[in-house]
Length: 114
Length: 109
Image (tube, rainbow over the protein chains, first blue to last red):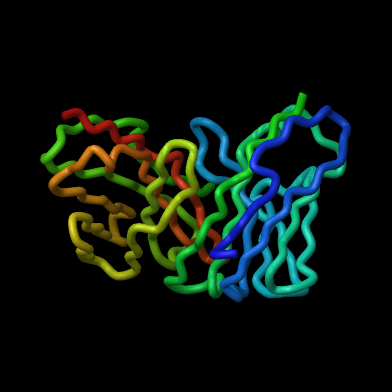
């Protein structure tokens, strides 16, 4: 693994189904983030984690949950998917949440909820 | 509320110079970032400004005026591979990035 990976690459999901998007980084970064990107809108923060064992809510957390059991992994779960959750989801990480630390992004997961 | 504004789309000619502007209104300021995003790909970091002035990095430069809530990204000697979206983002008082919708830059030969 080099950097940050996400799985699956894309997924079509029936409304009401549960889905977990996976994110793994090998840079030993403390902070990790989940964003969604929709056409015409900026990246919007769903949830974040400043360090393993802690999580926080971003701008659009409703319908999503996260966990951070260790440094490397930060899965995002949709408990019961709805069509408005159709989007491209990006996971990102940074050494810390403060200062000049840039965020490194995974390749994204394109999710379609029907 | 928090707001980042940038033009939706710009067109420029190969070899020319283009300036992409970004204005922001956020609760607190802990730095401004520019990212590049090619279609279908992830954003990648270009530059960071926290103090007023110009930061130069090769063909790319970024300027910040905190008093005006304004930044620009300057791209020189444009190449076809520079065709991409350019995202402006501000780190707010909670150290969260607030993102603009991005500026799609089209380079014509």
